[in-house]
Image 1: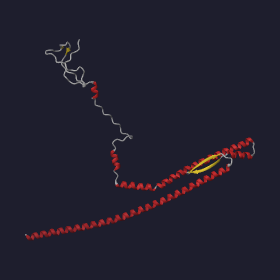
Image 2: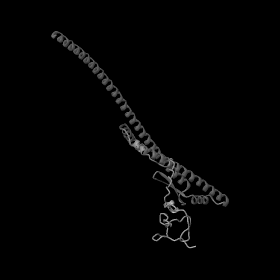
Image 3: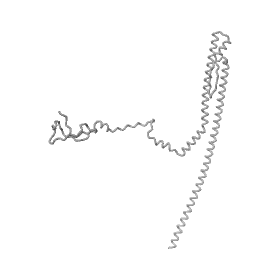
Image 4: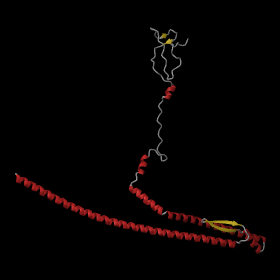
Length: 284
């Protein structure tokens, strides 16, 4: 069979919106059966626009994405928090200013504490280095003794070997830390190196003691300043209480005067009303 004929002026391609083109008008008296062109014709369908699958997909309303649950990692609409934080009253500002002043007054104390901590760390490091140097010295002495016993050499040769084996330990104190550098030299003996080390350690400990005494003195001065401030605050409280009592006395006296004036006003009003009634009676 031939394909169905299309009316003139109607495109064979489907419209972009998926609307089917109208059918050709049927001949009068033609019902369901064969059309004049030989094709099967059925009941006429209404011209209703139909959308294709592509159009339906394009017109699908996107579903709302679920919001991410609020956790401690995110901030969602916290403007009210900023408003509450920004709403600081006058007393809060005064307290913050007083706290800042107190902290600025203790900066020197904080610096001294930090300096004391650094000094303590340097002291511990110096003690560790001193113990390490003593251990190395004992090991070298033991080696010298073993060499002397094994070789059977003279004491002078053993002493020279021990002096050559033991290096000169030079103690350099720089930036509050104790640095030990070993330079192997047969000129300085073990006893002189140990004496120099003891002297340097003693000097370092004396420096620590002086710093501790200075810190204690500054802490005592700070305690004295705090005691003076406490005394000033106590005096101010006493003056405030006295002024408050005077004010209360003045207010009570003013209230008494006000009561007396109100009583006089009432008596005057009563006298004026009685005189007005007497004048009206005499006129009648």
